[in-house]
Amino acid sequence: MLKNLLKKLENPERPLLGPNFKALTFWGLLLPENVYKKIFYLTMHLLVTVFTATEYIDIWFVKNDINLLLNNVKITFLATVSVAKITTFLAWQKHWKGIIEYVTKSDLAQRKSDNKKALINNYTKYCRKITYLYWFLMYTTVVIVMGQPLIKYISSPSYRENVKNGTESYIEVVSSWVPFNKNTIYGHIAASFYQSYGAIYGGGWITSFDTNAIVIMVFFKAELEMLRMDCADIFGKGEQVNDKEAKERLKNCHQRHVDLMANARLFNSCLSPIMLLYMIVCSVMLCATAYQISAESNPMQQFLIAEYLLFGIAQLFMFCWHSNDVYYASKDLMIGPYESEWWSRPKSEQKDISMLVDQLNNTIAFTAGPFNNLSVATFINILKGAYSYYTLLN
Image (cartoon, rainbow, N blue to C red; front, side, top):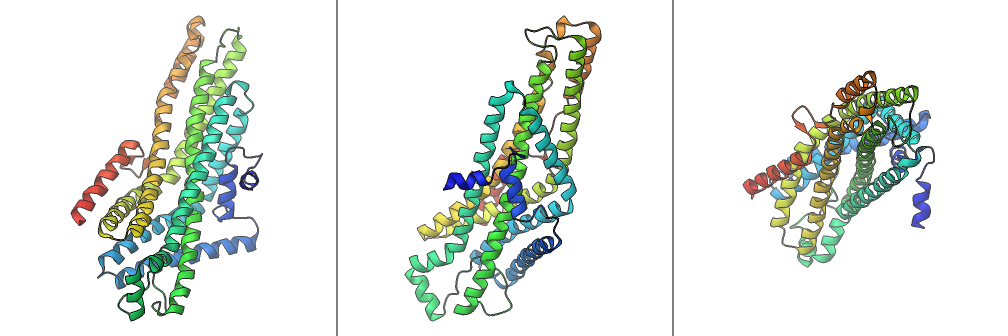
């Protein structure tokens, strides 16, 4: 059953981005051409955006309770990043579509090469694993967030008694303001439905946006590695390549690198503002979640909060790790021409190789705003900063 479901996510026209493209379409990040469907998705996006605004309003009402305040802040900030993702994706839809089409076109072109099949199969399988694992982790978190009130009600006799005698309020799915009394049974149920909708749809935003961005990063790294292989094969290996064929191969490598750099810069311009916001939010979220774990006495609640902390760390780590991979693959790219038999060619062709090497010497470094590169070193610094804030708060 699971295999059949996963097969339906595949798209022969998009062998790399098939599941990611369908997720972007399903959650409405890639708006359909049909006017009514477009209005439907824009309405759904607007409702979640309004819901995020109500989370900020609720901060005023819970400001005197540190646990409620931290719980609100960590989820509200994450929702803010989600709203920023969808807003920028819709505003820069033309750019994102251009990047997706470039990745699809380049990937299809490389799949025709026999000597790259092993590399292509490996990175395709890796993209599927990272996509499905991320989806599983995200929706496990969503289910836990939605089920947390019920789990605490069942597992804590003192909480049940306090709710019955009115000394404690119902735990919400997500802390948000509603224009009615949510401390009655019917008000709590109504608020829970709206909050669950926000959690599910927000989870869809995060999974579709993040996995698409991560898979594109994986492709950039793979394209750099395949370009290095082609640069090493400009003059052939073991076979005689005439001047005309060598020149065509050199031109192809040059043009592919130009296209790669242009799309990498465009991708970075779309992703960089989001990552700057997320790094700021992540520091606060990790700090708040770590504090809640130490302050909570119920083992079940500690486990649920720890899972949320794990998701926050994994989300940031995936971006930093894959960005780091792209950076080092781009640094090694200039070695490719020197792995060819350039030394056996005439001086005019050696000069062409020298110019190509100079071009390939440009590295790709994805950034989080104008201040930090998106790298493993930055990830470690964020963890250190979050721990420092936690120590101060504790």
